[in-house]
View 1: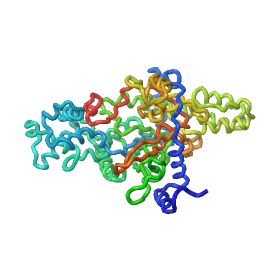
View 2: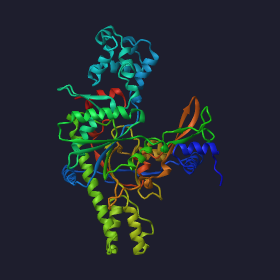
View 3: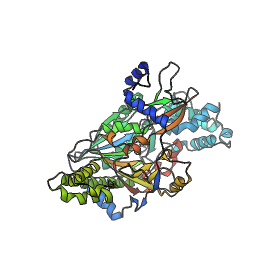
Length: 520
């Protein structure tokens, strides 16, 4: 069968690190369309989501602390930190692009961007980066206090966003000053908060903390420089930090197509590739040398005074995961022993009652060897424990039981983009959701023999999704890979646990830093 791509295009695909077969698969997804996931019911407490008593929390946290003494168990903290912080400042970008002067009269306008900017200006002293901002202005001969008194506010916004100034709209969130200690005046970036957090739950018996950050290539050196400075500041803490970085690989980029589902070409006739979304980071995760990995976004951090809840629940989730994987390893060992027939019932019960895994319809009629093979295939999988926050706002993406016969694991994290929003019955199920996904995961990446899983083998490629975008004013369709904690982990052993909302403190806009959870 001939390829739909010319020889020249095939060369471009190869140079990107993709295979022609993979490009053809992506093209077929555009042409066939990607059906939405069918929701069966929302996962709730007692039906897919575990709620732990205080005694259980303390016991699990203690068991995790004891597990950290195992020198052979390698713990790592994995932090997606690739994206620039531009979205944090989009309202302020609008202001400098729209208004030659930003005065009190402009800020008083009945406009969302003006109101946002007014909040920003009114609370300048509360931002951790205020001193750095004022100093950058003074370095250029400006007098911040005089400008404030005169009601000339545009320079404060311009110096926050660009150069000269802090340049915050073009750097990663990892390098933005998030918090200031009210007593000592110490200022921390979100990157440094992850160091502090990791030291409190991810340090091994040797007091070493393994941290891995994904980063765009252009910011790699800046992040490494900041990491080295942080290490020096932690020099007397007794902890050491092993920091590794990775970039989102070009081979995880995806084809873009035009409205006729033909490969989209730029003005030079080259086919256009686009980043494959956060699901592309599965390849970064796949390359880690670790047994247990905590996953948490770069912006979901709080000052030290507010960390106790986060630390407790990280340990709770870690203790739960280690206990779960111990049960899996014991079941695998029993199934691989000479007395495996006696182990069938307990392994089957573990799959269905604890691990949310579905047995084949014909399982009961299988012979002993086939039962063992089936159970081993179900249990030899990566394991994840995911925190779920109670939904106190508008229901949306979160934990659901799905209706998909081929799925080994029917319990999934489902995003809005994967749902059939045109189906009123499906949307009724969404309205019944009680929890949402705060991206708080701890994962086991190795099998009973200590070998790393090939994580690509446990994805659901049908959970990719197509988004409408544009390029130079021309409409295109972009393919995003199955999300890192959605379809990319669809066939993992999964357990959902309710965690308190105090552990979820994302910073989506710069003004989120004014919330009490980011003020010390």
